[in-house]
Length: 201
Length: 270
Image (cartoon, rainbow over all chains, first blue to last red; front, side, top):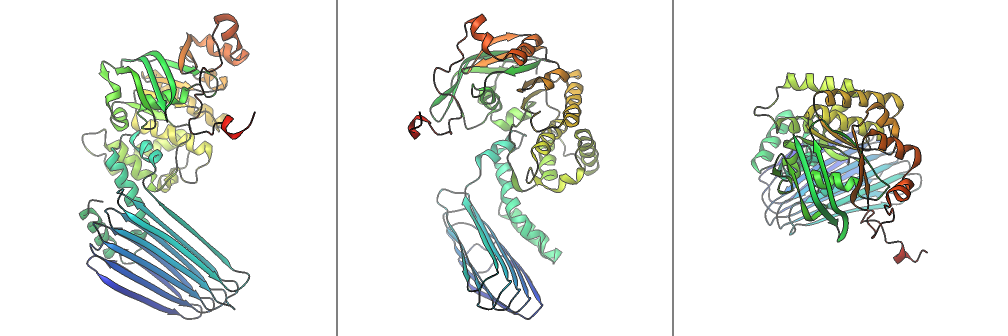
């Protein structure tokens, strides 16, 4: 499922029960200029799979929370949750993720990744992955990164002739593009690119 | 570039002085071997000349054809025709190499390069440096081996056609075949008038890219200049003759190595 949120506000809940051997792929891009609380709930049966990709640009004083909760109920289930964000203003951007592996979900495999680039000293961001594991023989890992631009990367790009602003713009787009590119619906991908251009990215 | 003049240049990082009243003049077509013991400021000199924000120039001047170079940002210096091949190019995830190359080619042209011309340009450059052009679709430097990073730096040098090039240990991590490929690219560009300054600890580079000048850096200054024979002598004998013949003290007056490295004394190590 592809979701492009450009004018959303308030709470949104997306829930799936994934049957044995089935797969859900959720790609969600958020460019809304407002407060947002998005909850994703996924229950995985034996041998089922979930791939969740989220990208969000937080502007102004917005407060946004993305909470991805994946429950591995069945054995040999698989999940990936990848969240990328840009916090441009003085708002708050929070990526929360919980992977729960139930007793009996042996052989399951889960990974969560979250990263936020803060563009302003007033940006407040949080990346907080949680793994709850109740069985043996599982793979579970997470990665979290939070920060401003890497000054070495900016200097490298500038040394090849790109201005500081252009270098930052490329790095910013670079962190969101993998999500845009994974939209199955190409017209939605084009719309996302157009909207990104509209907010100066 | 006809002339680059560095006068009485001092620079520091994190409050530690690294360049110390340094003087150097480069003329168009020079190929200089820049030598000196580890930690005496060679890479810092390159980075200060290229405009790294990590360093603060505390005194002195640098002019390129009469223009104040220190007033320019790194990107402006690049567009003036300067290029530095990084000793350790950073990984930049998320940025596709070909997008970055195209942007850096376009900033120095009035009109953006056409898709076809850019394709021809990059295919040719990839072939010359001995890399597969499939790498253009990968993220910048991400997952590249040491040798691939060095070839990728040379690739960008080919695409950007600079007048003045600083090569910071371009030969490290390259096998013999790769080194000779890179050397022939440097020699081709020299024949067209490009100016080079090369830092290397191995004379195998200087044997196939023969310098016309050698400069030795100690304690943040250029302490000795000579022709190619000086580079050969250092390679054969090391730096001890600087003291015995020229009275140059090789000990640093102050610690000027990597300012980010921990202070050994503060760690309680004798």
